[in-house]
Image (cartoon, rainbow, N blue to C red):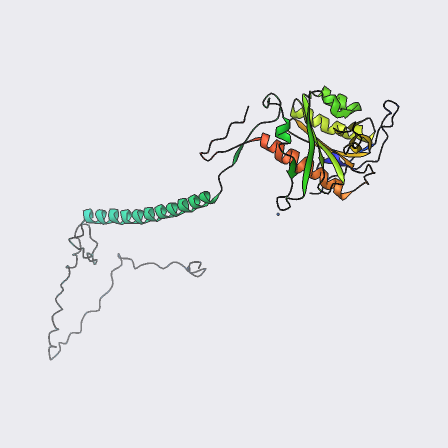
Length: 353
């Protein structure tokens, strides 16, 4: 509940027709994160021998040996390519050509390289395809598990986009209002609904003037008996022009009630009868609460069935305010007006005219 349910002290309203008007109190609210090595320092660099400086050869001794040594064995026959001769063009002396497979020409090398690249690309492509396929299957399975929407939102921010008037059958369609499905016997019993085209009849004093000034076109209200029978309740919806005007009404009502300059009126349809059961709503002191949704102002007036005073902080009164305002009028009646149910074919059901 919003701060329209802040507690306030009782205040006497101005007398009307020489009869003391009952007090009304704004009710309290409901409770519902390695370096490379180098030469040592100071050492000059090593240099190769100078080819311009010939090496002196010592001549052989003058005497000949008496026995000739056996000739050395012939060198093994090489099966590889011959050593390159010094001075051969394109080859340095003392170096040897590497053997090359004659079947591995440049064209074959290029073909093998292309085949290797294609194999790598194929493996990567297949892996990526399988990953994407698994992800799509997982996303589709997750999406299929979510329930389909049951309704589409409808704009109710002004009477221009929400022109259809409220009806008693829309707000109070039956004789009982069930709050908790697990407790079907604990229900609010509807005594009588009413539709007012003169909004001034739903309130007195400054509140009556306020809702008229803010473009009220109708009030749909109904009187109920609480589940335990100890309280009488009038719940109503005020049809204002725009959501901005509903906000203005919400802010202005609390000081009016607290200062005793106006009040919401309970609806007592049988107050003129001798055995009236709703007369306390007109004569006893009451608690009131209110809230808004869209361009609508919802309110609730509570009185004890025996006409006694409702103590401040009464838990039953707080629960009734929450049940009637938050759960029923805002959370059910106006929620249904603010949404269109979706049919089995997936299309919204058009609202009845």
